[in-house]
Image (cartoon, rainbow, N blue to C red; front, side, top):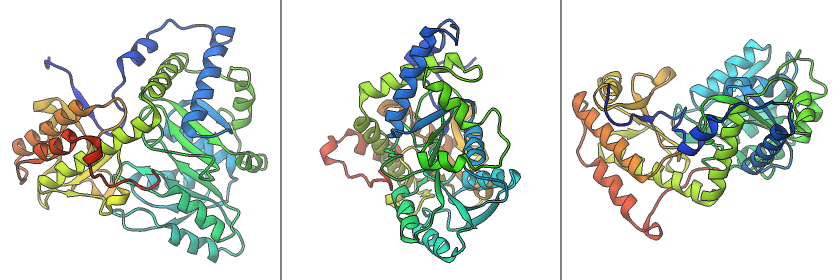
Length: 398
């Protein structure tokens, strides 16, 4: 038994607010009843507001990986080529899924410590005179590296190249925590899930779908059953689903959307920016490196920090959880031995951030990682200033 409350500061799943937990505990109701349809219509309308779209949002019981598969199999056909803008491990995993489905993946590799380059994408699209590339795949907020991509700039790259490819964006960790504008930014399919900025347990997979993407989907040769857009979107018009929905999660999502409306989108985004800036300030005061080298692209929802060469990052994370009941994110892929990640998104406030940073500093000491004292004090200095005095670098796409 560990006294007190555990700190879950991985970049997802995130902490679930008490009001949402209470909503999740409601008795199950008939998912074919008018009462359920009323809930579903409210939720689907609220999701359109969060995505900033007037287009359809397809909602499934599933994970972010399922949302990836739904987007790829509805909008594309086997053998199509996609241009994957690599920005970290989740972009890599999305590309691997695309290959398993039978798509050809053209990788636009780059420095993972910098955001993906829209100009490089424009060059690849301009070189594709036969228009073999059917879609461009971009991760808006790459949680493995703690950086964001400038989504409007990728739409601009497609326009400059006069290329008809679809724009598919992974917003799994950004939706609800960072500004996102599906329609205004010209995104064709936005992929997201419930367990991050939407402050729910895992279990809901989301696709916001433009009319252009639905038209392309009408020509898709992928066999689809559960993940098909059209049956879902058609049933949703009256508040129902073609398969059994995750009814409890929909009650929770209704409450999460209410919480977001009460706080206000501007306040939500500002809160995440402040916490991201304070966390990076702490990391730098400890004498560690923020993995993202471009302050303008640094994520407001997760900070990836590098330990010195030769230091045992696994010992740091083990000390954090075993001694202080603090869960930190592991490094992923080729940077696993050098990076740990601090999540600061969802249902999170200043005091929770202070406790998290105190836990990191204690774990650095316990694990014998070389560091300078004062990281927590540096973050407190930023958090304690009036908002008009704070100087915080913004994130791309904000």
